[in-house]
Length: 147
Image 1 (spheres, rainbow, N blue to C red):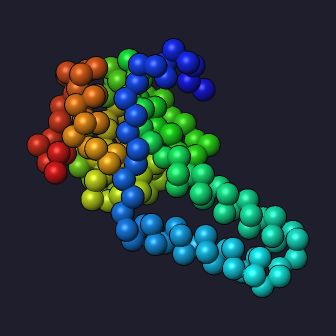
Image 2: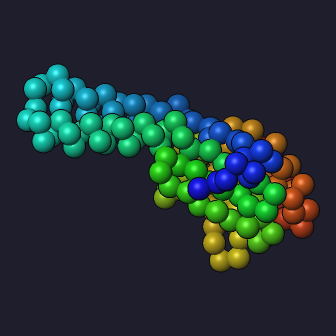
Protein backbone atom coordinates (compact mmCIF):
# COMPACT_ATOMS: atom_id res chain seq x y z
CA UNK A 1 0.00 0.00 0.00
CA UNK A 2 1.22 3.51 -0.73
CA UNK A 3 1.72 5.70 2.28
CA UNK A 4 0.48 9.30 2.60
CA UNK A 5 3.90 10.78 1.90
CA UNK A 6 4.16 8.93 -1.42
CA UNK A 7 0.65 10.04 -2.47
CA UNK A 8 1.61 13.72 -2.10
CA UNK A 9 4.43 13.54 -4.64
CA UNK A 10 2.97 11.58 -7.53
CA UNK A 11 1.72 11.79 -11.07
CA UNK A 12 -1.53 9.88 -11.60
CA UNK A 13 -2.35 8.58 -15.08
CA UNK A 14 -5.69 6.82 -15.59
CA UNK A 15 -5.95 4.02 -18.13
CA UNK A 16 -7.35 4.66 -21.61
CA UNK A 17 -10.31 2.43 -22.56
CA UNK A 18 -10.86 1.38 -26.19
CA UNK A 19 -14.48 1.22 -27.33
CA UNK A 20 -14.40 -2.45 -28.33
CA UNK A 21 -12.88 -3.52 -25.02
CA UNK A 22 -15.47 -1.38 -23.23
CA UNK A 23 -18.25 -3.16 -25.08
CA UNK A 24 -16.86 -6.62 -24.28
CA UNK A 25 -16.52 -5.81 -20.57
CA UNK A 26 -19.90 -4.09 -20.16
CA UNK A 27 -21.83 -6.66 -22.23
CA UNK A 28 -20.29 -9.39 -20.06
CA UNK A 29 -21.32 -7.53 -16.90
CA UNK A 30 -24.84 -6.96 -18.27
CA UNK A 31 -25.21 -10.63 -19.23
CA UNK A 32 -24.00 -11.75 -15.80
CA UNK A 33 -26.47 -9.40 -14.12
CA UNK A 34 -29.36 -10.47 -16.37
CA UNK A 35 -28.68 -14.21 -16.02
CA UNK A 36 -28.34 -14.11 -12.26
CA UNK A 37 -30.78 -11.45 -11.09
CA UNK A 38 -33.45 -11.04 -13.77
CA UNK A 39 -33.81 -14.76 -14.48
CA UNK A 40 -34.12 -15.58 -10.76
CA UNK A 41 -31.05 -17.79 -10.44
CA UNK A 42 -30.29 -19.69 -7.19
CA UNK A 43 -28.65 -17.62 -4.43
CA UNK A 44 -25.30 -19.37 -4.86
CA UNK A 45 -25.19 -18.29 -8.52
CA UNK A 46 -26.29 -14.75 -7.59
CA UNK A 47 -23.47 -14.49 -5.07
CA UNK A 48 -20.87 -15.75 -7.52
CA UNK A 49 -22.11 -13.49 -10.32
CA UNK A 50 -22.30 -10.55 -7.93
CA UNK A 51 -18.64 -11.12 -7.06
CA UNK A 52 -17.69 -11.31 -10.76
CA UNK A 53 -19.58 -8.09 -11.53
CA UNK A 54 -17.95 -6.32 -8.56
CA UNK A 55 -14.48 -7.63 -9.50
CA UNK A 56 -14.74 -6.62 -13.17
CA UNK A 57 -16.06 -3.18 -12.22
CA UNK A 58 -13.27 -2.70 -9.70
CA UNK A 59 -10.63 -3.48 -12.33
CA UNK A 60 -12.41 -1.30 -14.91
CA UNK A 61 -12.68 1.79 -12.74
CA UNK A 62 -9.42 1.39 -10.81
CA UNK A 63 -6.78 0.80 -13.48
CA UNK A 64 -4.17 3.54 -13.42
CA UNK A 65 -0.46 4.20 -13.35
CA UNK A 66 1.23 6.26 -10.66
CA UNK A 67 4.69 7.77 -11.12
CA UNK A 68 6.32 8.35 -7.74
CA UNK A 69 9.82 9.62 -6.99
CA UNK A 70 11.46 6.24 -7.49
CA UNK A 71 8.64 3.87 -8.43
CA UNK A 72 6.12 3.27 -11.17
CA UNK A 73 3.03 1.69 -9.63
CA UNK A 74 0.55 -0.04 -11.93
CA UNK A 75 -2.81 -0.40 -10.23
CA UNK A 76 -5.62 -2.58 -11.59
CA UNK A 77 -8.40 -3.27 -9.12
CA UNK A 78 -6.88 -5.30 -6.30
CA UNK A 79 -3.63 -5.88 -8.19
CA UNK A 80 -0.58 -3.65 -7.72
CA UNK A 81 2.82 -3.87 -9.36
CA UNK A 82 5.77 -1.70 -8.37
CA UNK A 83 8.69 -1.14 -10.70
CA UNK A 84 11.74 0.94 -9.76
CA UNK A 85 11.95 3.69 -12.40
CA UNK A 86 15.74 3.48 -12.44
CA UNK A 87 15.43 -0.02 -13.97
CA UNK A 88 13.19 1.05 -16.86
CA UNK A 89 15.45 1.03 -19.89
CA UNK A 90 13.09 1.51 -22.84
CA UNK A 91 9.58 2.43 -23.93
CA UNK A 92 8.07 1.34 -27.23
CA UNK A 93 4.59 0.83 -28.71
CA UNK A 94 2.88 -2.58 -28.73
CA UNK A 95 -0.43 -4.07 -29.84
CA UNK A 96 -0.32 -6.94 -27.32
CA UNK A 97 -2.29 -6.16 -24.16
CA UNK A 98 -2.84 -9.72 -22.93
CA UNK A 99 -2.18 -10.21 -19.22
CA UNK A 100 -1.55 -6.54 -18.61
CA UNK A 101 -3.20 -3.66 -16.73
CA UNK A 102 -4.25 -2.10 -20.03
CA UNK A 103 -7.57 -1.56 -21.85
CA UNK A 104 -6.35 0.09 -25.05
CA UNK A 105 -4.49 -1.40 -27.98
CA UNK A 106 -4.08 1.95 -29.73
CA UNK A 107 -2.47 3.64 -26.74
CA UNK A 108 -0.43 0.73 -25.38
CA UNK A 109 3.27 1.04 -24.72
CA UNK A 110 5.65 -1.50 -23.31
CA UNK A 111 8.18 -0.65 -20.63
CA UNK A 112 11.30 -2.76 -20.45
CA UNK A 113 12.75 -3.04 -16.93
CA UNK A 114 15.51 -5.60 -16.95
CA UNK A 115 13.88 -8.87 -17.98
CA UNK A 116 10.45 -7.62 -16.93
CA UNK A 117 8.00 -6.15 -19.45
CA UNK A 118 5.01 -4.09 -18.43
CA UNK A 119 2.30 -3.04 -20.88
CA UNK A 120 0.40 0.12 -19.97
CA UNK A 121 -2.09 2.36 -21.80
CA UNK A 122 -2.33 5.76 -20.09
CA UNK A 123 -4.86 8.26 -21.46
CA UNK A 124 -2.14 10.91 -21.46
CA UNK A 125 0.66 8.88 -23.03
CA UNK A 126 2.90 11.89 -23.70
CA UNK A 127 2.58 13.17 -20.10
CA UNK A 128 3.20 9.67 -18.76
CA UNK A 129 6.39 9.25 -20.79
CA UNK A 130 7.57 12.74 -19.79
CA UNK A 131 6.94 11.96 -16.11
CA UNK A 132 9.08 8.81 -16.39
CA UNK A 133 11.82 10.67 -18.29
CA UNK A 134 11.89 13.37 -15.58
CA UNK A 135 12.74 10.62 -13.07
CA UNK A 136 15.07 8.65 -15.36
CA UNK A 137 16.42 10.56 -18.39
CA UNK A 138 18.33 7.43 -19.53
CA UNK A 139 15.14 5.68 -20.72
CA UNK A 140 15.27 5.05 -24.47
CA UNK A 141 11.96 6.07 -26.03
CA UNK A 142 10.98 4.83 -29.47
CA UNK A 143 9.79 7.72 -31.64
CA UNK A 144 6.64 5.65 -32.35
CA UNK A 145 5.84 5.50 -28.61
CA UNK A 146 4.32 9.00 -28.70
CA UNK A 147 1.82 8.17 -31.49
